[in-house]
Amino acid sequence: MNILLTGGMGYIGSHTAALLASAGHRVHIYDNLCNSNIGTLDRIQKIASQVIGFTEGDVRDTEKLTKVLRDEKIDAVIHLSGLKAVGESSQKPIEYYANNVQGSISLIQAMQAVGINTLVFSSSATVYGDPVYLPYDEDHPTNPTNPYGRNKLQVEEILRDLSASDSSWRIGCLRYFNPVGAHETGLIGEDPNGIPNNLMPVIGQVVNGKLPLLNIFGDDYETHDGTGKRDYIHVMDLAEGHLATLIWLQSNLGCHTFNLGTGSSYSVLDLLNRFEEASGQKIPRQVVERRPGDLPEYYAKADKAEKVLGWKTKKTLSDICNSSWLWIKNSKKS
Ligand code: NAD
Ligand code: UD1
Picture 1: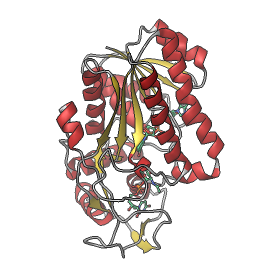
Picture 2: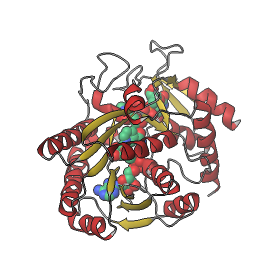
Picture 3: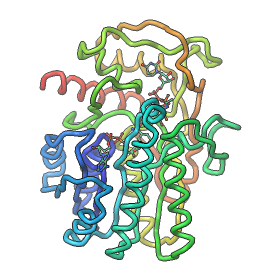
């Protein structure tokens, strides 16, 4: 397949591009580099041992995107581009709606102009909001609590409306849980600009001396050790989930939603202890107040993706920590 990845130079996109190209697909990345670096392209090519196409452009530039879709004879699109910082989305909601919702409409228009109708969309478990029950299955009510989450839900709704209006579309909305880890070569990994919010990139910055210590947001939750629990999914398992979805969509029409998670959860201390084992490094830490808006625990019911797509996660928490450590060590050197 000829596959276009919007946002393919970012954390999840770069790993997915490497996997798809290694599996024999022709990959073209379309990214405006607002949260990524052109140097990643060489590293993806090194992993895949082949040339990866790249166009620098904004997903809202419908004309440019249409031309790339046509010129590259694209068969399917994975739409990963967007802004993703939850806190920032409350401070700059219009920027988020413009980039994430308007950007998705622009992509759909470009695909319509060229007659491409296979699309995989990067959604998020954040669409569920406060749990009514756990684990979250795909039928759990959706009630996102911030503009970023509402962006994701609105795009999903647009895609469902699109599919209802035109039965030729083949769409997968993938609700990611907590993506972590890096490629096993240590060549690519998560490399956020500025001060990160998510746990693993914060640990990375502590190791690299950019942050003095890790603040653990609360140890008085009703969990086995009092710290928050999450469904951490290895980014390469996530990449495999995209490939499985694309293959399944080749013989299935309509708009379909899948959780991509492991189905189990680990606490902050579970992850931290395993990371210390993997790295041999002691991570300075202190317990501080709970972070507003944080949930004690959430995790996926991951059965639908396994039953329908034949996909499930294979990697362990040790794989996550070993690969993250390799990446953090490599990025410390460069
Ligand atoms: P990322 O920021 O590393 O990658 C996003 C990429 O999109 C970046 O390379 C950025 O330059 C590009 N981009 C942003 N706006 C663009 C625009 N208007 N036009 C073209 N390119 C643009 O993020 P990621 O972690 O790789 O996330 C990928 C997708 O998955 C996002 O849509 C995100 O919301 C979603 N997601 C991420 C997580 C997570 O924890 N990482 C969880 C759930 C969902
Ligand atoms: C965050 C987002 C969520 C997004 C997810 C993707 C918020 C409110 N939610 O969720 O929308 O889908 O990332 O991965 O931002 N922790 C610390 N110290 C830190 C950072 C985190 O103790 O410096 C703890 C948190 O309290 C939490 C766990 O680590 O218990 C994971 O946090 P994080 O990586 O930010 O992910 P989420 O909170 O699940």
